[in-house]
Every structure is written in C-alpha cells, then in structure tokens.
Image (cartoon, rainbow, N blue to C red; front, side, top):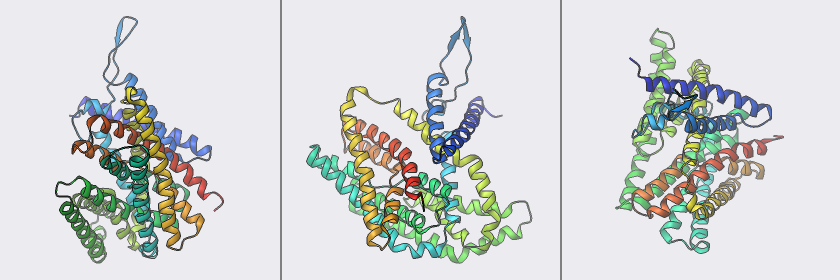
Length: 418
C-alpha cells in the first residue's frame, strides 16, 4: 500500500515536470537555454510549496482548507535522501551517462593533455586567488582563506553538459575537454579536501588517491576488455529491452563503485557511458536512454536544484547580511574569473585557440555539490566557528545559485556564430 506521503511526492513530481517543460519552452523561444527554465521552475515550485504546501492549515470562510504537504524536506525530515531527491539524483546520473555515450574514447585521448591543463589551472588559480583575497584583503585567518579557496576549486559539470548537449557541441574539442577536465578537477578537489580535513591528512589524502587510481584502473582499463562480453547478455536474453536493462545496470554499478572510491557517482556514470558508447550496440539504447532521461529524470534534477535554492534561500540570516554579502561577492567574482583565467590559460598552454579557451573557461564556471560539501565539512570538523561557518555556507549557496544560472547564458553566448 503506497503511503499518502509518497502520493504527495508524486504530485510534486507531476507539477514539477509540467512547469519545467513550460518554462523550458518559454526560455527556448527567447533563445536562452531551456535548463534555465527548469531551474526557475524549481525555484517557483519551492517558493509555492514553502508558502502554501508545507503542512500548515489554512482557514477559508471559517472552514479549514485541506492542502497536501508537498514539501519532501518536511515529509522526510531527518532522511539524507527523500524520494524527490532520489529521482533527481538519478537524473544527473542519466545526464552524465548520456554524455558518455556521445563521447568517443579517441576524442578523450586526443584531448587528454588539454583536459589535464584545464583541470590543474581551474583548480589552483581559483584556490590561490580566493586564499590571497580572503587573507590579505579581507583579513580572514589562514585556515578561513584555505577553505574559501577550496570552495572555489570544483566544477559542477551537470549544467554545462546539459547546455552543451542542447547546443549539440558536446562531442566537439571544447565539449570533450570540459568533460575530461571536470573529471580530473573533481579528483583534485577531493584529494585537496582530504588533505585539509583529515586528522592524519597526508595519509588520508594518499589513500583516497590510491582508491581513485584503483577505480580507474579496474573500471576503465579492464572494463574496455570485458564490457562487450557483458553486453552480449543483452543479445542472448530474449526479453524486451534486455540490452537497455544490462546497460543501465552497468551505469548504476559504476556509479556505486565510483562513490565508494571517494569520487562522485556521476563520474562512474560517465565512465560507463564512454565504455558502452564504444560498442556498435550502443545505438540500440541511445534513443531509449534519452527518452527515459529527458522524459522524467533529467528535468527533475534541475527542478530539484532550483527547489533547494528556494529552500536554502529562505534560511538567509538578515542579521549577518553585510558579512554574507561580502563573502558572496568574493566567491562569485573570484569563482567566475578564476575558472575563466585558470582553465582558459590551461587550454591555451595546451595549444587550443583563444575562442575555444574562453568557451572552456566559461564551461567550468558552475559550482554545486562539492562546494557545499566543503563548507559543511569545515563546520562539522570545527575548522570554522559556527557563526562564520554559517555565513560562509549561506554565501556558498548564493555562489551555486548565481553560477548555475549565469553559466548556461554565458556558454550559449560564447558559442554564438560558431
């Protein structure tokens, strides 16, 4: 028997999908990325849910008005993942899996040098700039400066990938370099986080590096040899969509082991997509995966991002507004400029053209999960005081909101007339 709470979440999903499609269409008609419409759909849904559908009782004409509780963060309070977030997280796995299916291994190898340069520049330039400005100009402590710099290191590639897919340039040199750079970027940021946070920091960072290396060795190198044999099962099992089921299982398994290795599960989904994409059989599932992904899960991911923006924005502490404003401006300005300069110079040093280097730098701008994880972890480990930590966390939320909304517009503008 399905509970009332689950049906309420299903209603929220239905409303979110409809609004995402309507606003996505409107933004597309105005020659803007549809993903921005989906983000705004989430913000609107979040605001409406907060105002009217969070369990309060309303009295209309002296009678109680029964409204369903559509706020999953209240319905499932205390749970790390509620059903709405669960569906959304599957969406980002689908998005990176699709991008992997459409990325050729030969192109990744060709752009390997550029991706490495882009990742290193995109990590260390924002890290150093953030640290210098925080310590020298804002008079923060050394550790506060390190955390601020660390927040600016990792790229959230989901928004960029979606925009590049919509522009049909994901498989270009620029798109491939951004994907490869984002994978390396993620690994570097996680190792640096372990180095700063761990009580036995050097040892902790070393073992995280070992686990990551083992994941890529086993699941990438060996996967190239056995993936076709596993996919053969899809041809031998004579039931509808068996090959699709096998492929999605591989995606989920790779995501699980990537997460257990200390890196993001979306990297595992991307690696799985790249490996399956090398097989001629991948054409059998491409349309089905896109139907599942774009029909349900992927729009929900971006709606959920917008929804969380609205929820987190409602917690802003007005009493600390001046500090939060300064922190937000520093994070946003340094975050955007640092990625454009760092990743852009890295691309130039790797031999890419100036226009391509600018596009890559812009594509590396968005911040999301890891930035919030770093600020939260710094508070949990007692590295930052509760008051400053809370202010920095709110500023980080604002950073994710601004970069998530601004990046698709800048990416599309940078590709105009290409």
